Every structure is written in structure tokens, then in C-alpha cells.
Length: 287
Length: 160
Image 1 (cartoon, chains in turn yellow, blue):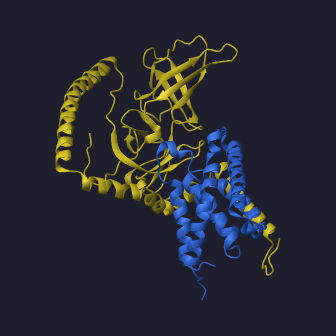
Image 2 (cartoon, rainbow over the protein chains, first blue to last red):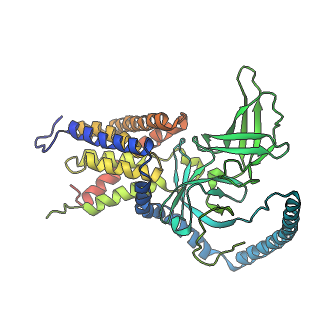
């Protein structure tokens, strides 16, 4: 159906032109990977949209904070102080163990592990397709964030940074279908690869023989192989093992420790050997 | 006057759609998040097709790609194809009753999501989940209300 006064090229021509442009961009981006600078620039340009998206929540939080009563605050303060005391005691022990570990490693002639630096970041936006599990955080290359940087929450590894803009960065979660992470079982050091299957609460281990020694409930920690993730952080726990002999490999599902479905605050990690340095906004805790 | 009337409100509606697309919401609603960008674009395409056309759709598609972190052009392609059908039949869709419109919108959004899925499958080996099609239903439920709100908005700010 044509409208009476149509100017310029026909609708079909225009559609074709636009599709060609989109197709060319897709080719450039996916096959030749030449779009990274453009992507970085445009991400910086669209950052306001992402900040707008969390604005209502921030206003809500502020209102809730303003409405908190004095006694509730005092109670929370007390609770936090107790918690702090407990953590401080744990840290004392940890320091002792770290020193001991360093000495033992020296005796063994292996490299002493360096402390890593970290920074707290907040999620400003999410990408919600089942086949792309990504979040956008409020730190970018202005803060020293770099591509391939490991990201954690208070329970375990969340994912890694895949693209960086000036004040935002995009983090791919370990549950994304295109992500895999090398792990090892804490109990018996079996090395495995956990692949995302597009489910926030589940990952799958690839190529596990039926005769595996893994058991349900085994804790898997990062193996440090591959150089992206530091060694020894908890990642997931085995939730089910299906030894169906008709299949080539056992089907092993694991549940990640990190709460991928409700991630709000997360931790960026700079391993000791990273070339980039964190740039803190204000004075923050460094160790 | 080369700035047509209601340019700012028009742009504002796009920004709002983009914001709603990336806004963090509770997990149980996540899978049901309506396809805001598609709905807003379809509305403008059928309400003022002489003004909002293929170029707008292309730009919005690329912005969506940036915000969702997909390969450039994936969402753009999906949106362009449904925009073509909307533009071809805008006079018909415009005169449908709200119920009929809702069905058409459902079909269009289903089409868009299938195209996007197909491209993602082709490029990044995406696996299919039924939950990926839930937004078709939630968008259909929302369409009549969105349509009325948008019509009021268009008349109020003289976007034509």
C-alpha cells in the first residue's frame, strides 16, 4: 500500500540499503573484530542511558535511607560492629597463614603469591537475553579497568570484563553461553572446564568421563590456568551428576556460588602481575 | 522552521524505551520484560510513518546493540525487518481494533525475536530457551495500554 505523496527511493530500496549497512557492520564486528574502538566510543556516549536506568532505584534507596529511624541505625551499627570484630579476628589468622604460606613457598623454591588490588563497582544496567548474560558496571578505563579483568562478588567469581568504555565497562557472567572457565575440584584437584548454558543458576562441566571421581557437593575453585582468573577462588559446587552410559560423557551440572541473578555490588580484581593500575575515585581501602 | 514540532518529546520517548530496556528489575520479572523498544518504534512507525522511517529504526537498532552488548547489527536487522512490514501495512494496522492490533504486535515481536535468535545462533551458537519468547506475551498484554498512552502523548505534544 503506497501513500499518495511518497518522495525519494521506495520503501523496499531503503530497507535493502539499511539491511546492507546492518549486515556490513555485523561482518565488520564479528568476522574482522574491527569495531572495538567504535564500540568503546559509543558505549561512552550511551552511558547516560545506563545511569538513568538506575536512577529510580538510587532515589528509592536515598528515600529509604532518609526514612530510617535512629534506633534502627543504632541497631545496624551494633550488628556491623560485631561483624567487624569477627572479621578482624579472621584476618589476623589469615595474615598469619599468609606469612607462613609465603615462607613455605620460599622453602619450596616457588614464587611467592602477591597480594592483588581490588575496587568495588556497582551494576548500572543488565542485558537480559537468555543468550547474553552481561551486566554493565559503573567503572571504566578512567578507573584502570581493562579487558579480561576478573570480577568477583562476596561469594565467588562472577565473570570477566569484555569491553571497556570511559566510565562504564561490560562484564560477561560465567553463565553466559559463550563463556567457559577452567576450574579444579578442591577435594582431589581434578581439572574441569565449566561452560555457561544460559541459565543463571547452573553451569555445565564439559568432557567428564563416566568414571570420574567427582561427587555431588564437591567444591570447584578457579584453577588459575588460562591466566584470566586468579587461582583458588571458589566458583561453583557440583549439584548433579548424570552418568547416562548412552551419552559419550557424564552430564555434570554445577551451581555457582556467586549470586548471578541478583548481582548489584561487585569487586574488580587487579592481579599482582596486571599491567594496568586501579585509579580510585576517593581514598579507598588498598592492601 | 526546520525543527518539526514535537521533536524533543519524540526523542524523549526513544530514550525512555532504551532506559526501560536496560533497567535492572527483580529476577522473576526479568524473563517477562516487555520489548519496549520494538513497541515504541512500531507505534511511531504506524502513527507518523512520513517522519519515522528506516533510518530511525536503523539508529535505534544499533543503539540497542550497543546497550545489549550484542554484535553490531543483530537487533538492527530484526527491527528493520519488522519495520518494513509495519510501514507497508501502516494504514491497515492503524485502523484495526485494539485486539486485532495486539495480535499483529505479537506477531511482529515474535518475528523480531526469532530473527535476533537466529542471528545469535548463527554468530555465537546461542541455544534456544522458551523463556526467550515470554516477552511476546507480556508485550501483547501491555500493548493496548501503551497504545492509548502513546496516542495521548502524541496529541498532547503535537507530534506529527
